[in-house]
Each structure stands twice: as C-alpha cells, then as structure tokens.
Image (cartoon, rainbow, N blue to C red; front, side, top):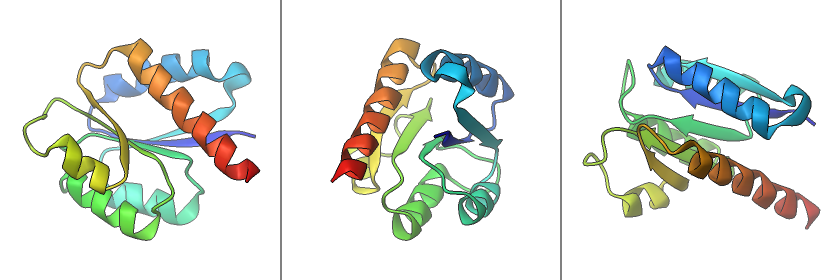
Length: 131
C-alpha cells in the first residue's frame, strides 16, 4: 500500500532531496509525495487525501508552521508529524511534542537520522494497525 507524505516547505530543493531519500526508503516508489508551500494548501490536501505523514517547516508562505501543527493536531491527531526547520529558537521541542510532533530536525538534516525517523514512524503505524 502506497504511503502518502505531505511536505510543507517553501524550499523547492528540499522536494528533490526528499524524493531521493524516499526512493531509497520505499522500494518501487510505494509513496506519493505532496509538496506545498502554505498552510492553506496543506489543509486543502488533508481534507482530500488520507495523509500518512506530515513533514513541515516552521516558516511558511502564509502562516507559521505552528499554526499548521495546531490545526492538524486538532483535526487529524493520529497523523504523525515531523518538523524540519532552521528556526530552532521559535519553539521548544517540548511544545512541539504537545502538538503531536514525533521528531524535530534542524536544517540541513542528517539524512540517515531523518530516514531512521521516517522508518520508525511507519513501523509504529504498522504496529498500531495490527492491534
């Protein structure tokens, strides 16, 4: 079954890096990567698609990534969330955890650590679905 991953970031180069990383992680391209740059577009996708993972920056085009995390946590609390940001002083890791964030990576991320986090999230989801 194909995983749906929502990347919310203003950096177009990040999409290329994620595509490369996900190609290695998921054999046979068993994923769909949605890349948007704003909170509103992210919310539009969430309404239409069953997203399996959200990866967001804290600096977005229309609003803060914190705004997105609050809305997603309220409406879709079971979707795992990863924050990937250069702005580490905006919010504490403890506050992000309260918003349902599983992992917080500083840009540029260590790709092996990021990959490990994504693998763990999908392993966790598999275990939850078995119960």
